[in-house]
Length: 516
Image (cartoon, rainbow, N blue to C red):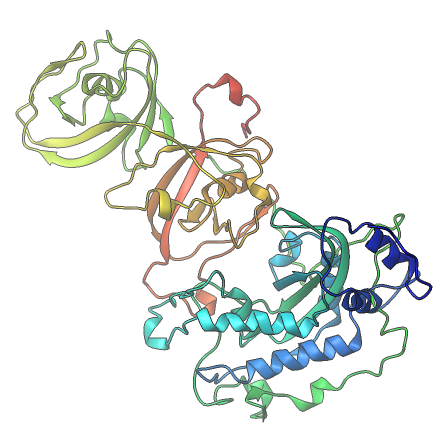
């Protein structure tokens, strides 16, 4: 393809067209219009607006229009206004040209919708409408279905863009548009990609909540609105007067010059932090000796996985029974007797059982067990399996909790799971995590493995918890699960959880793992 310079075409566009060999641009006039709209001829070191006023008005008008027409109708849907701080934070993220939600420090307190396109011009309203159109795959949870938390029913790929738009208590929005010269979108590099970021406050999409309450429009508005209603939205007239804009205020924000360093807009609410306490670490895999008895090592704590040393075959520690072993038996010798381990030692999973009326002797694998004709507590042993995971697998998928206990395989996590977006690899909780969390990304959050190397992880499913607390650890932001302050909790528990730990078995190739 030859490059022809036309007198009316800006140099920036000429360079674009010359570099376009190998792909087709469906309508070059629309591309010119797009670049004229979102780029400046000369870079500015200081500008005010991250989006033209016309686009801002379109986005805000469409949000309120769509919020007012939800079905079933909303009784507490509040009118949405434009927020300049949210606009600035959206602009900062749009200039990063990263196709994922962020930055992590802001996602604790804001909601966020993203969209990107290239080629012919599309207005921001086009993307807002496409977010809302996820409603076709969404089933609203009525109050009688929320017991106490509401089911999430989405028959499509995603419905969270829609639910954030119609989240009743989200009252502020701020958006920004940036043209990214090169942007990686799902593994493909898009040139001159137009990136739209919309930030919302207060954030929506809380797990276990419906996006709004259904009923007669404006029948359940907060008292601060004084009963005022406009287009099916709770409305407060005096707070929505806009300041007049100057031409300078309406400039579109352009990419900063290379010497500038952008500073993220931090959340306005600064929470005081308490001094960190060093808490004892409870390890799932317990290192035991050849003569360690089950009843001595397992008293009320979570007993699941043990690391046996080598050389237990000829130890004199007794075991009682066959298949079912009495609780006074040696854990490691019972594992050899059953055939789970040999004299080299290794990992063994233990399952506690109820009382057995008697225990029968036998000789297996060079170990002689003893009979005991007295009712006593028992346990069984099993082999520990190892399984490779991706960054998205959850405990609910791998080994959901079942009473009295569940044995999960020892898992091997790949590197760089921290970089996966939260909508594909979520993390809920701290120390103990909801079973819908990504196992490997959770392991990074917990400090069990390093993001750069991955590694082996042990997982223990546990029974339900009422809540899971979010936190920022090791570069991973975990989210909270239903919180009592949101009206999501009763005496009923929330959802099954798990905790995990690093593989402590000596493996030379894993020497780079986090040992903290």
